[in-house]
Image (tube, rainbow, N blue to C red; front, side):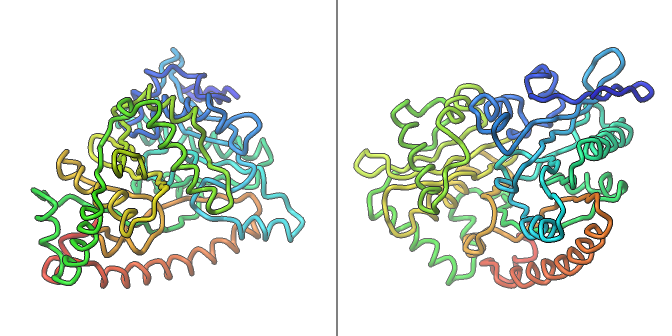
Length: 391
């Protein structure tokens, strides 16, 4: 697809390799998951692309001279795995009505429930015009491809108005995020907790120390090949325990460790020098993103230490402002993570289902609001500080 609208040319590409890395990264706002290298690693390793449920069909906005001024990451999806905004019931309702839900179009980062920009624009002064053309082109692509729907998952909150203008339905979700309140140390962070919650956190950390488990914070290119074999096996075991194959393969991790090591943090736990657990994180200039966890050992509190406390330690030491440890998990609340809203936007071609889902989302949003209010009453922070320590 190539269309010209005024001084903008819209193109569809079937691979991230259809655009120069430096041009794509220049408009990517520094988000690690939006980097050309990350998206290319997904394709080159075979985790997405031909033969998978994720088929790239990214949209590019260029000047008539060929300069990239905007982009919308986009995929044809043939199932709903790896999205983390759950629409299985919508697909089931379509099928029971004798309609086809797949393929659908999804603007998302595969297997990555992290908030980041979906409307990439080179010049902020042109955001309105470029966003308008990208969204209109995505809707036209959905209609031309006879897709049931178009979904935008985990965009920035300020991008929502562009999608709502085009009739997308807004869906609210909840994750648990940590914010750095200029803490000078982990003890300074814990000093904001109530006494009981502070004692619990210290007890969890003490159990790991008493078990003589040590931790290393490694940049992506610092683990040895043998270490990476262990790291991948820990990650894969987490999926196998749930009876599923891992979303990502060893080739993907090898590619990102080489191509974007500064954006990758591996928290590696060792017992008697032997690797026993890992938390694989990504980072931007401001935010740490916890993504993958795995272990071959069963120590009390090991998961909390590797996935949460070590990440908080790292953020404080590096001056990072936020820590987003992934989806779900009310157990994160008592360890200093606050309920934080996430957003998605949904357009459905069938008008009857559009109206039904609109009604469902109105009810769901009221439930999410009530749930988040309830959670806020159970944060571990002292009552005189709880209002100040919110994401």
